[in-house]
Image 1 (cartoon, one colour):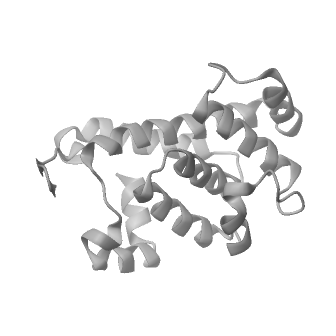
Image 2 (cartoon, helix red, strand yellow):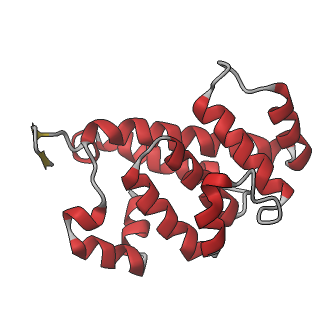
Length: 172
């Protein structure tokens, strides 16, 4: 991948086993959770990390699984949009922010308790795993200097809209 500062590494090509493991981890983390909830969590974590490439990908994926435009538009202010998100979504978003930002160096008890009240132990473990995978994915992508797909190759936008890019990414 060429950037303004020179060549960057393509981790998927140069460390394919790590890349495949990340794809498998992502798929495993999603199991048992509603796809709309997962995409809201991934989109919110991408907002918090200022990852334009991730936001582009996850908002597209969110639309594909049925997240409404209004929920996507208000996601940055979800706490104020009381009637927009279910209690379950709100608990997941609060946990996402607590894990992603770690302002206090840990997840506050009230945030964890709220999430534990909305999710079974298995679901909560899966939710924490989803948050973990997006954080690791962002950490892996940032050094690569990823740009928005539409800025690099317009054909990728069309492939993404058809679902081919998503299937390729998840299958390894």
